[in-house]
Image 1 (cartoon, rainbow, N blue to C red):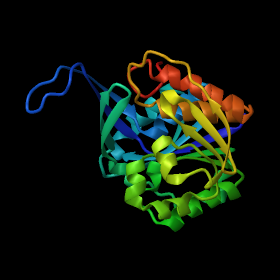
Image 2 (image 1 turned 90 degrees about the horizontal axis):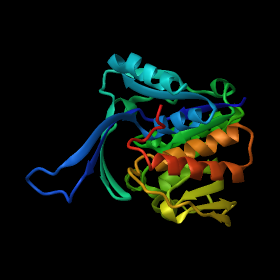
Image 3 (image 1 turned 60 degrees about the vertical axis):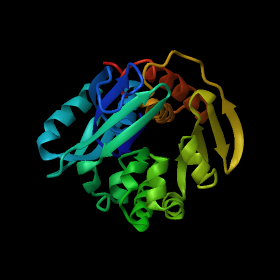
Length: 279
């Protein structure tokens, strides 16, 4: 079976779902749950849950190495963890219906060393999925080299841009230049409006309840409709979609089938609290 490497952040998620409109300067009754998250971490877990052979590469505080390794192992995800003195990343998610606001401290994730990853390392993997969060705070050439080394090692490179806010902070044109030549780009609608459909051979746009658009060489090929479900928590829906997509490709199925599986997986994700499959 082809191997999948997922590169990106490890985040401790605190998910807050208010049961009423938030009241300023006083209490608001809410449901609060803490889970291990991070976009790339979630993608790895969803992909493994669908039978893919998945390895995750990230950076955590040295005291959290065992905890994080064990949590990934519970999802059958192998790990290559770099260690830092910085705190493991953390994030507070405020959920409001289909909308969510995220307050993020990336912590140790910012110290992930990608310069040491050469093409020989990537020969162990058929698919490399990179979370755009990995790119922020780095030089354009460092990102371009990472993509080149992965492809030179024989891997297909998939990129989720990560965050429209971070893209603007990075610099739109610099970000476009950095990720140009990825094989598959998987933005949401806000990210797509910034980046367009010409940065990669294939662009798969996540439009939430409005469906999924697929582009080839900048030309829109198909719109995929999604089934309406009763959403409990939209956190991680895009990650579940991406995990389903890369797992299906790794299971040697065509892109059309991979998108359909991604949609089904995302529908499962929004019906549970948290951003990962239930064990």
